[in-house]
Structure formats: C-alpha cells, structure tokens
Length: 236
Image (cartoon, rainbow, N blue to C red; front, side, top):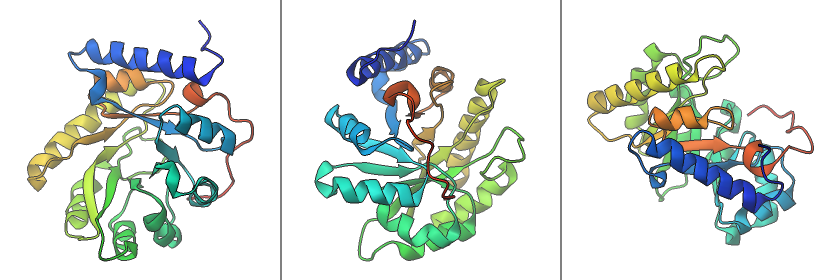
C-alpha cells in the first residue's frame, strides 16, 4: 500500500507502525522518539512538520541547518539534531546551533565541540556514532575506539554523553542494531552511567531497529515525502 499523500496521514501511519513494532517486543510507542529528518526539504515542508507537532528535527549539514534555523527563528521551539558527519572546522558553529550532536566520532572532535559550548550554560548532549557494517566509506568509529572516546567525552564538562548512534547495512540491519545495543549496555557498565539513547533505524529499517531496542528513529522521506532537490553538497 502506498503511503498517504498528506503529511498528517503519513505521520499517523508511521506512528501506528512504530506502535506495532514496539508492541511486538513488549515495548510501548512512547519509548521511541521520532526524529523527522528535514535535510534537503524546503522551508515550507519544515514549517508543516513543526505545525504537525514535530519539533525534533534532524539535519546532515551545518550550513543548511543554519539557514533553516535563521528563517524559522527561535520561537518555533525546534530542537535540531546533527546526524551527519561533522568536520572539525565546523565544530564551533555546530555547538552553538544544534541541541544534540549525534555523530561524534573522535576524541578530537569532542574536545572541539566542548570548547565551543557557551559558558555558563548546560552541557551539549551528544551521541557517539559507531560503524558496525564494515563498509569502508561509512563514517563513525569502530568498536575498539568506542571506550577510549567515551571516556574522553565523559571528562569534558561541556558535553554530556547520552548514548550511541549507528547506520545499519541493507542486508542484515538487525545484526548491527543488536550489536549497537550490546555495546551501549557494556559501555554503561564500564562508565558507570546511564546512556538512555540508542539512535537506530531509518525509513527502510526502523521497525527492525525498534525490535532491537532503538529509542530514536530517524525518518525522512517516509514521513516528509520525496526531497524536491538534493541536499547541499556541503560536507559536515
């Protein structure tokens, strides 16, 4: 069955699928945050998403998000999440623009983000991006890098570590999702702190992610429709 043509219909259908996937493993839909991925979408689509009650929005590029945030203004009440790879030379702007950075992949990047967080002020929430597919072109740290980077982040007063993010393979996404959950659980024990966020699952695999414990799914075209123009060529 094709998705509904209107945003309200797509949102309702998506929430129903989230609820069914959660119930299948004894969870509730309220345990899964919906992050609407607005990269490449025009301003009017972002405005419609906000009007529909979606205020947790994900962007891949610092420049594109900055333009949208400037047009919408602070009154929109949006929490912007950076979900794309971040270049270190853009860390300063990212720390001041985003309410969560989900793609921290090195101790050096974490240190630059922390140094850019305004003081006094609350620490910047971050997730560590872990790469579990073995695909060479993918961003994110490898398993063996995870603990040293997590320990480095925990020592930075400007950041607060909330959990992990991953992008799965198309072939067996449940394998990477399960492994990411295992790594999060182990990391909680090693750090002695709760890491409540597992950002796993996109339009094509979010149900498998929920079954494996995802607490946040990142949904773009399935929710907001096709992107009329390709995202900015900016990296980070």
